[in-house]
Length: 610
Image (cartoon, rainbow, N blue to C red; front, top):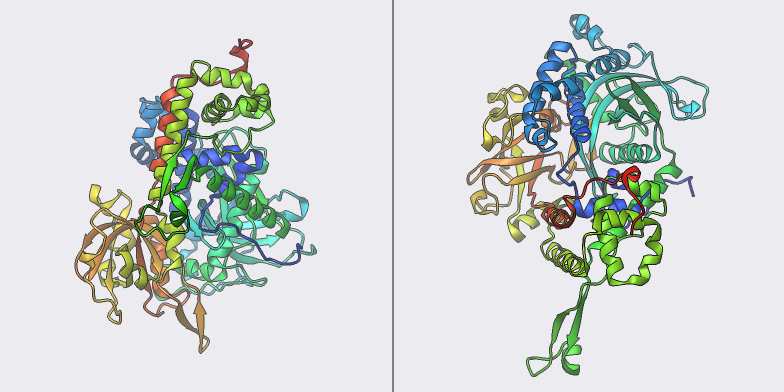
């Protein structure tokens, strides 16, 4: 039924990224392999350059400055921060890398000139401070953003930047991911007479950036962006049909923060921008998924979650009971009991190979995929019939391996899965199941009921002073200090908890907060995963955390309680983040051990396999 907005989410504790959802559209096996193994760490030159171009676009967007001089400075900083990745892909010449990245500056400038009015805003800054602007009397957007279908065409103006690389974790939907850019978009339908026309609106909108050569929208790119639109609506709330947020600058000169506050209250749009941008041109498309599309994507997410769990489930283990007493659980030490028996490693539980051999030959994970396929075929030859069409690909990557090699691979693949299962600890998906005080008392991996020390924040210069040095967690981090709230019932010293300098923590709102609007109390749902930082200092009553400089504004807006600059004191909780993909790294290293020296597959250079 497409008339309702009810969504069934299977295994919500298994957090799936929109990237995996989009990968599963073309190949479920690829999505599971990507989840299990993660990144190879051996990126090709084109992939590294694409990442650097992403960083440059986001930096220009965040700083509202794409001038040649500023963009060159940004690029040098980006190259310095990614020196290891450049060396890994064989680009030791910094001048070559610099030239490849700055090629995109003209297209970034054209994009910003088209969809922003920032230059005009600077020129009229003084006049804006003394007046009041609203949707009814402010500048209407004039740039056309073409939709994937004619009714989707809209006029667009980006009024500000809410965040870049915003971590959007939505446990209710079992989704997690990083949005390339979230902007404050002012939109107006190109066709006011259309059924979906809602007039001019101000709301949050996601931008998904692709920097490759091909600029034709693909199904997996559309699926990825559509999933992000759902996540932002779940995280920030949906924009109301007549959302015209007033922009009333306060006595301070920080009109940018005032606009951001208003837009956060407005919520998120049900659409987003898919942007293809390289050194030759750019192409922007307006993507507005229907409710039917959203239900299909959540269904696809559910399939991925089930496939990922099935592939990681402990396999090749049985429990043998000694006598009826042990089987009934009442052995009591008199000869009854049970034991775990480890059998030979069985087949992997991965989805079937893609039926399109051409897709497999071009896939960036075909080396890992064929390693698992060969190991399964060696164990159960009856499986080979389904893989005949992949024989040439399998021979290329694993033709040098014998049965002993493949048995060794299966054994260690199973052992790594057992280790992953025994040590799984994902705070992001499970911490929301427990109240902060309960979790702090249980394992000491949470700090409950703390407030932000605004005096210390002001002393550091707010968002103007960055913390330097390796202990800060990065050159773009700023220190903030949290203090145990005076009304907290927890009296345990913070130094006795399972946190130490260098630990990563997730900052979330603690409990439900209330704000006064129009002389009435409004209950607002707590916000999870506001940002992530690393512990700098810790004493009995306070804890210092280095947080990303670009995310500090969101934390400050939580203190103001939305539009109100005199909002209540917001309480936070800090959860220790111990999630890592070390098992994925081990699995990737296991595959590399057997196939790392095999060159990429090329159909032209392959003869007929023996």
